[in-house]
Image (tube, rainbow, N blue to C red; front, side, top):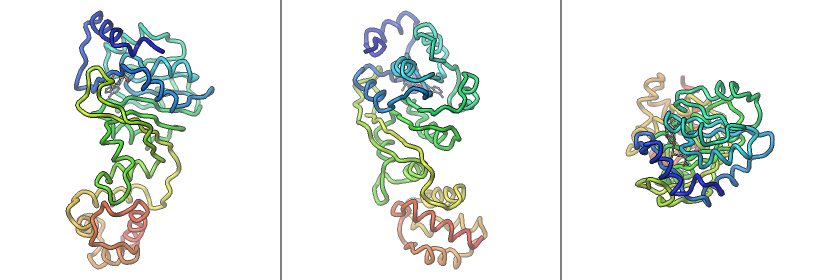
Length: 287
Ligand code: SAM
């Protein structure tokens, strides 16, 4: 049990430091120790592992990461919070890094803290305005993440896990599922934060693994993005501009659908990652 999640602690620190939460940084602090405990349990940090946290806030998760991991590195953009954290958290085993997690080079930060390639876990209650770019940065990085346990908006969690045909299925589902297994850990009501956000949240666990499809990544995602770029069109018509860019004729485009055994009159949201991979490989034959 940590006092950091007690509402009276949060109000007292904020008052003492003259700190008000900043909407532009997505600051919603966790004030429910049960939720914190479940996130920490899910991360299941083992001896020898390092933790990376994005947006430690007042340290609700950080304090536990520092106790359980060999070392915890927490990147915080708000310099007032950085000062508070450096004063209030026992600095042994925890580095509070002042910076913008989207811009900073995570490997460089970790190495400067003594990291030498040990297994790594990302644990975070992510700022909502940056959820998708931060998750994609983690998944696309070369860092050896054993898992990512992250709190996100509930609607984003649904999109990450969605299957073809569902209304939530889209580029984010395909991107997350390309790089990892995604599991919903729990739903989290908006009432467990100060201030309460406008939407409910969810904790998801992503387990990175090698992609299960073999189309070249850049071209695959160009096809996926083009397919979903014009959601109301059939996937064939949505892909037409990309095919033109790649110098693929309309006949070759139709042929690629035929060879990949995909009905070109469907909408992109019906196609699985495997379908997109087969289609991409067929399209590349015409390039
Ligand atoms: N981890 C804390 C908790 O659970 O109570 C705070 C979570 S709050 C949703 C998001 C945190 O991310 C805030 O502390 C905010 O200042 C920080 N943040 C926002 N944008 C950031 C960025 N680009 N880089 C690093 N931290 C950022």
